[in-house]
Length: 262
Length: 220
Image (cartoon, rainbow over all chains, first blue to last red; front, side, top):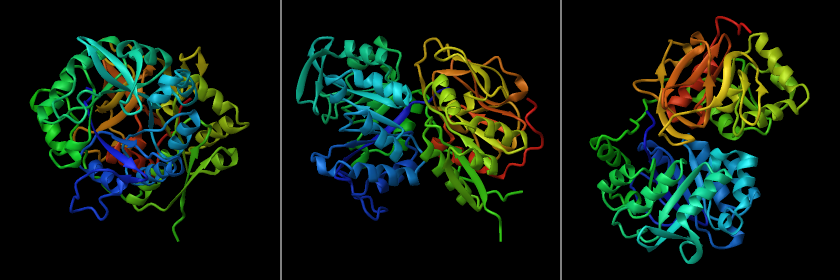
């Protein structure tokens, strides 16, 4: 049986982790690679880096972070933030990203989704959809970190990105993001019923039960940032809570066993 | 002095080559095997390699075309594997080992593994299958030794092998029914999941692949 994915997300700016607790075991808590290695060991099922580097000159810092991460950990890595062209994607994929999340660029030029899927395969094309509720049962797509309304309906847009060849949708509730009041469950239900693509839920987690609710609403990936960074929960606590609710989670893999060549 | 094991990761613009190469290098390091990993599209390198790894992402037809667009590359893989070089296909690299693929029209594969690559049905489940799924073993095999209890692999695919021979199936996974996860015919093997992204489970399989001395040749 396919397992739910618990996905810690790291906000990275100019190659450094933006927020986070200073875990004692880390030599450099600001280094995303060190944080990633910690989540890898802690049983994370995937990792996401969100690059929030503002200045164009420092855009390449994420490539170094991705490349150093891919050298150390063998876990699927999604990178989002500032992905505007298929060339941006190519650079990230070559550095070691497995999936690239595009958001604003896909809204302003939806053909980018088709081109990316054609060039690299749907499996690495994630479309980030930032949603704000307008009325009951309706949400509008926002871009630029939730600042710019687009007039697009979220559910229509989810259907469109699926048709254009995306492999996954990263669905963030801008209403819930940072509130710790739980995922927007009616949004998740509406989106997971509208498309067959896997949907990663994001925005609003503050308690263990929120992960359970997100999974029950149909998300197959559960993304969270601050609850992990600030040490509120460990990945393993999340998995235990999911398992207790009867939901499928991956046990930690056995350690590598060296075997001499025969 | 120990001879270094040469591993060719075949570059035909079809896959996440760097990850596969890094994982192979890491698997060698963890198991104390001296190895040289190269990402190459040179037929001569492929013929000379001790191990061949064929990654693959995207559509079957595109990957098959990519492989054939490099003169001599497919022949080099066929020559090397016929002479006994162990081969590992990953994801679409594994799918290419089948007789044919049905994604974007019908395309010939290597034909080492009976069956074709067809869309998965999996009613009521998300498509693509994306994430960690448990491996259920049909046969014991040197490639799957030491994986521990309930090993999982990281899968991303919406097409899968069907109508294959039971004896080629080493492991399946359950996604709306059994889905081939590891296949093998003599010295050629493949994994539908991404060994290079499956943490210690993937590294263990890669290490087993590097240490593997196949007892038989592929019978096709």
